[in-house]
Image (tube, rainbow over all chains, first blue to last red; front, side, top):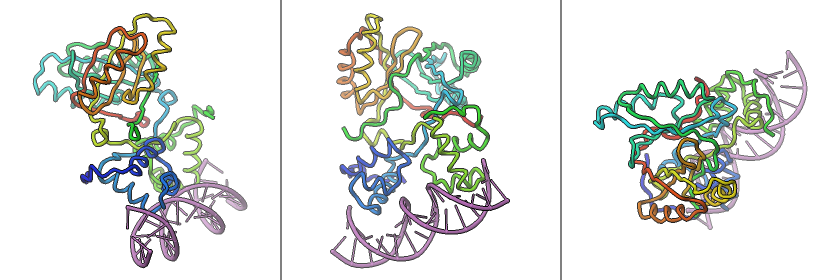
Length: 159
Length: 159
DNA sequence: TCTGAAAGGGTTGATGG
DNA sequence: CCATCAACCCTTTCAGA
């Protein structure tokens, strides 16, 4: 898996990636029309893009507000000792928290930046209590998201 | 569109959302087997979930590294005057920058948190130059992502 | 709301340009 | 690498329960 025909993407491949990124459930026959190909070679290209790892997976984007996760916040987390043990234990536990949708290790002032999703401030308060108790955590600072100006924009494959 | 049968999600609906979130390209017949339904009512439920807005869209997740967007960073942005004009002009322009994958307005110390994606530090340098010149920007602080501990986790629909 | 059946259309692989 | 074609499977709709 994840073969490396890395440098062989032509304009048609890039268009396929662009279309699938924006409409992951389009039928192969419709996709083939959009890229001016017949169905067979189009499907072959999609399979190749999947197997070479350009397409990691497909997914539905759900409406967070309607599913009780309408609020979000970023939390900066600093650990108290920067040893491998502390980092590993923190990571192992933080990824199991379902409200943590992202966890990035960053350079430039603190150690981790988490993105949280939750229903309301009451849920946030409980959640913050959980995070503060994670192994190694010494400081946190929360930035509640007031407005989503731009969200899950895809990767710009066609310029 | 976006009807409100909001409170009528049963266990089967939630399972459908969970499955589609993790595999957006599953066939309806396979999905119907996973939720112990025949194909017809399963398709009906999916259509209803789409029309009521629980499912916003479908998409392919692409491999950023293979497509020249392997690095990412968060940038805190502070605007110099917090008037509506400045905010609106900043927002209008920032969303047009293709390397800006997310832009969140936040409370708690600065005004906006951007997520950027780019190929290398040279590309970052150019990009930062663009952002600093956006209308109203007075301060920025960058946190380069060193490691993705957890990424695009879905919404927890089944506990 | 579900099941089941049936028509139409999509998927997929073999074949040949 | 492409189009065509044929067999098969899936999608989608419509009775009937």
